[in-house]
Length: 146
Image 1 (cartoon, rainbow, N blue to C red):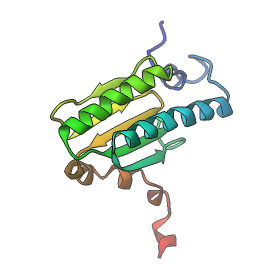
Image 2: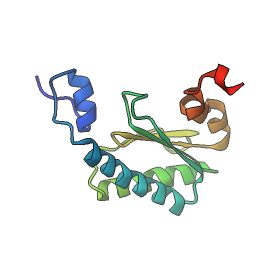
Image 3: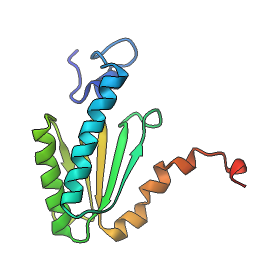
């Protein structure tokens, strides 16, 4: 049976325990994620994205290890940010970058393997509130917060 497309981590998850691609050592994988995150955040900053947030999903989600969320003020800005991200990630050696949404969309999702990027218009970002859904405060016991 051929391995599913995607990163080594996604291949291992899809293959199940004991099968699939070799996972790189944790330090190597973390270093690569840090490099990609730096490329992503730098590109978003260059494109004047607002309120850039990075969330660590390691151990909390099977689909990715990190999530980056940013806001663009206009459809054209969001489309340009997505195009620039796709180009810069390709230059960084990432072969498969999938973009969902596009021109005229309030929300663009970019799947960069173990990092998922969400580009929102301000209204859509507040509606979906991904920071609240995936933020650290949800991991805390509500009774200890009182």
